[in-house]
Length: 174
Length: 174
DNA sequence: GATTTTTTATAGTGACCGCTACAAAAAAAT
DNA sequence: ATTTTTTTGTAGCGGTCACTATAAAAAATC
Image 1 (tube, rainbow over the protein chains, first blue to last red):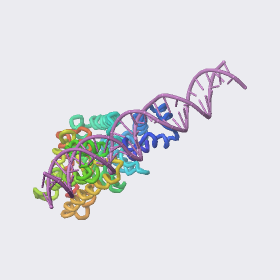
Image 2 (image 1 turned 90 degrees about the horizontal axis):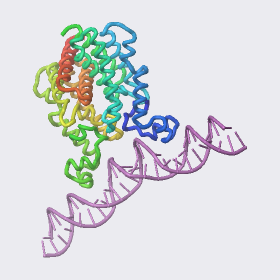
Image 3 (image 1 turned 45 degrees about the vertical axis):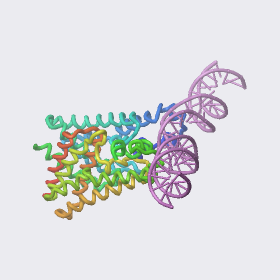
Image 4 (image 1 turned 60 degrees about the vertical axis):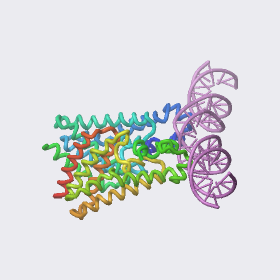
């Protein structure tokens, strides 16, 4: 998960993944079936843990604006990463990958996350849920990309604060 | 340029690039020196043409808010692309690339573009130019990523309109 | 302790990568 | 028209890719 997160799907080889896990290729394939098989498990583990910032923000309760603002703040705190693991694995892990299977896996995870955001927004603004969800997702994708390009937490937090104000205004009135 | 734009630096091979240009590998290396050499020329051509949406927006004049709003609208119109060339070549062309030379070339082009945005914003808001430029750049990176994930023009235009309102509000008052 | 089953390491599969040596063909110069 | 230079195509360089056949070691069963 860490290697995929740090360098992206294509840039990491099976031999290196095995070395990180302390196993050799045959054991790797016995355990995961394929490189994409491990990627799928990495995506699931990622989405099931603390990296799922929207789920964490949602768990703390509050109205939609509070949840979204908390999500953006968590993104700013998490996306700088450590050991090169910047940005979001789901959003950017298979970006520009030549492997259609990896693309499909990441795409499915993205759709799941985006749908969760949209559904929560729809509880307060059913008519504009799609547009508002797009706003949030574009903000997260942009922050993930900026983090991968080296943006630190301070810069991301400034952006997150502005995006939070934007979302509240857009949610409140047309 | 089109192949790099559509699939990213690593996913395109020299043989395929040569086939697109109607030349064989030896002629390719005689003309461009290396794969990264062609990528550099592609980035320059991209930034020198109509894909440099900020330069186009700036050329039409107006105050900072007008220029930024126009930039975001142009991004929404351009980023869906055609023949798979979605998003921005500079922002996403070397994303997750394993080649440090390609990364450095794209990074330099990004810095150049970001500096241009910051400098223009600084003419009206010198104190908050960095933060406001980050907001714009994150918006563009997010729209580029969303376009690469299949977002169409309509969705991007809705996001661009919201980001335009955000920028005007943030520029106007703290 | 002997036998069977599972797991692992060694080694290598064909395919593709960026890149290039070499020689044939085309162009230019004499 | 002959020679020289440039350009180009053929073929292949070493290297890495995801993946696997085979056989040795370890574990489990009898």
